[in-house]
Length: 239
Image 1: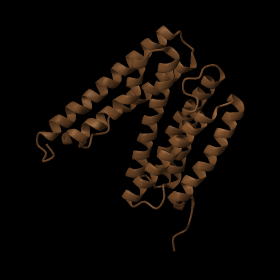
Image 2 (image 1 turned 90 degrees about the vertical axis):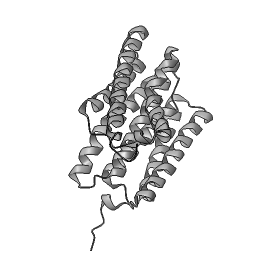
Image 3 (image 1 turned 30 degrees about the vertical axis):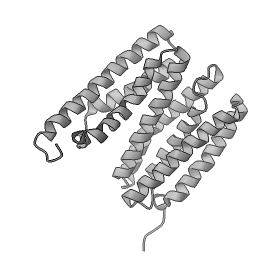
Image 4 (image 1 turned 90 degrees about the horizontal axis):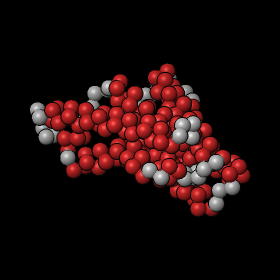
């Protein structure tokens, strides 16, 4: 007999819990910031799309549950959806957005250990983790681009999606990459640089230089991945 636990929570229940948490976050933000209906709707639609894609990914993976680590990842997704409602706003709203992003990044260091400790690590969990990380960078880069008037900052959030789009055209880009510590460090650097810029702790000119350096590191990291995949594909049928 299988003992039911938090790790056995069905996907639909986990998503419903995340929706309830989102309702609370949006209500709090509406009262604190005075969000208009369009911004609240943007947060809801973001969460709805993320929920549908998560359910679809779980179905394709044959997973009946996301596990306890998945619950942490969904909580991060709720924070990111909340941050969407604050993009482009300054003052208190920008401060709150930074706070949500900091908590989301902190939780990013929790879901992995939770998955390993509970023996529930999975490819699905890792994929969801990556997707929420990537979208948080899109939100942060859009916010910084708007408040600084530097649209090129969006490249930080969009570069990963450009890579994914390219992989649909070039099959050899779909190969499995080895785990690189440098790639993890560079990815973390993007979030730190964007949060520093959004927090306004540095003059805009200096903050943008920091982001430019982070972006250069990101381009280098993707370049290393592309070169590795190209070489690996030379002896692989996928080429």
